[in-house]
Length: 366
Image (cartoon, rainbow, N blue to C red; front, side, top):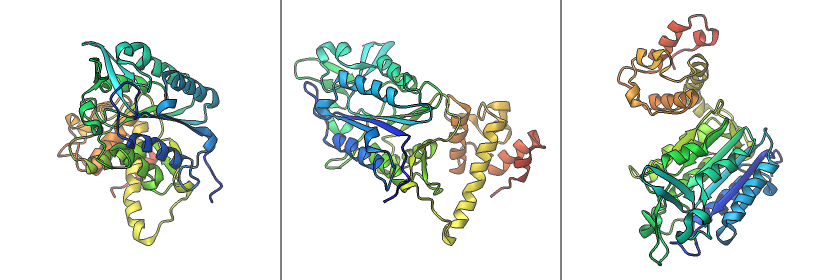
């Protein structure tokens, strides 16, 4: 039994499958919550204290209970803590076209009075804003295709209907604030898949593997936020090609912060057969750290990406320079970002701009 632990970790995990008045979801949603809780509190995985992990499942996941526990999470976490909020269930879209809002659908939501019986994005964002932790990670696994008939709309059998899902603007709103990030199971126009008879949803299957150590590819002993999303974003398309793409939203993340221990905090020694792989990875990591410092506004800063032979149209927009660089370098490692850009051309361009930078001068092409 590992005794290190991750006492600064706190989590609120919410899952609703058996709604009182609305279309039900597969029981995999409940497994998602229970399995994430078990992984977070395992001494062999994430090392959270069981007392710091609260679960609300089905009948316990009422509107008032969720808001109460979000307030409790804000009360018990401090600036140096890590806070995680996980929701698996229905999302809904309310309002008129052009003025739409997304709501978190609770077990007691009533489609006949949805705006008063659900949690609006503003309420959710306000509750998250009260959490003063410098590290807050929100997971949304919604728009479940496993419900077949409920993937596009929610119904109650009484003639009421609500468009299913969350808007991209809602995801962005929930990630506002320093050190805040959101991972969602799919894009706003996609569905979150649950395979027939599967124990977990596709997104949570990847999340669980990542939390159990697969995301810690460097063997650092920690699961870190960018590493976790990189792993999930690579694994989900393998499970369901072309149909589901997890998204990441971050307003102002300055570091690749830890969210949990990896395999109880165990660091992996560099075995001879893996040492060459690690040597290949290290220059990329070092370049990322340096280039974020030198070009804080991202690949567009001083047109460094274009000058290195890259094509900005091949890169996705991100709200912070660090997130933009992280995504751009990941794309570059996979052979994307433009036909004429590579590690060497980007490094050479940076060296030309900052010829006296000591760490940059020592960095070589892997």
